[in-house]
Length: 63
Image (tube, rainbow, N blue to C red; front, top):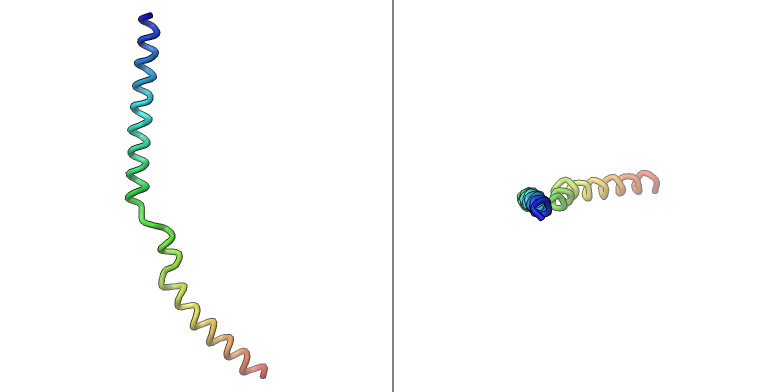
């Protein structure tokens, strides 16, 4: 019976450590900046006029 109690205490300690680790990981994910916002940054919008200008130049050259 005592041995079973020690095993359960060990499991409880393991679960407490796992909960602590998961809380730390959640905190890191909450503090992490949003990656999606950087993918649609200002650099993408600069390409739109450049592509339009280059396309217009190609149309003018071949027409």
